[in-house]
Length: 362
Image (cartoon, rainbow, N blue to C red):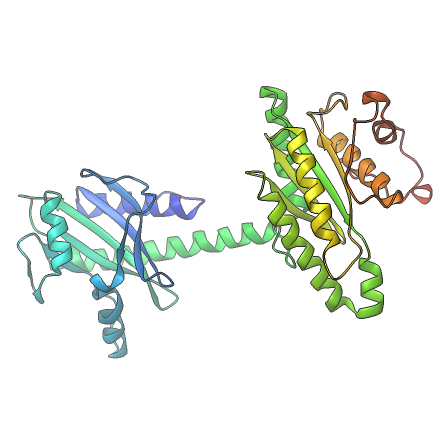
């Protein structure tokens, strides 16, 4: 089966491969969402009937209508057996007894003569099912087809497991472990993409940089566990505020520093959200509020060709907010355009680390 990089791509590649291997006209892969008690269809491939979509938004079925996926599997495994595929026909006859009336009705309604269903098992548990159908009038699947489908379901399970592991590794690589927000690596990647969009289409790119006040005091006086709780709480506030602007990335840059990266919304909308962030942070029962700096290509800050410059501008604004103990965000470019003190600070030559709060990023 073709290599895939996401769970959706993996399911699509598996369904296509299995359909061809079994000579079916249609195939689908569904996942058992245990918390919802539903069998949700991830992908349909081949000849789609009316109402079927390749990647359905919400095609799902109550799992109690498909006891073979729940009770049947566990009963068989308890007896020392393994998961086997089975064949359903539009006339309702099955080699091991009467067919599932729900599946039979679906076969008839969609003009299909038979199907073979194989459980997909991950980590010893039913994960979902593989479903392959043939048109009415075509040869009915036999026992050999069902055995082959069982093998194909195991191969599919291995592919899905690998894709999920890769997805988890990717998630961990771009996620801050403490807060669950994006990390610096994720911000750098997204910001490079955003600035390319800005250069090509003129999209507004805004960066909100935050420095959480009082973290060191909390760590020193109440312990790092309490300090971590403050970071987590502020992370939740940041995420909530970021959600006001669709598509905004909320991230922890490291230590007590966080940011929001917005692509598309006007600068004034971003500044308003930054103000909301300041207000909410001030209400936290730990810490001493937050210093916030904003830099946006929608403001008069001069050309922004690199991520480094936008970060320097947001850092400089945040530095001024910190120094002034400001309760609201400081915004680059709004006090004189290119002569704005924040812009001048950001564009000044590099200074010695000993004379500044910290070296500007990148």
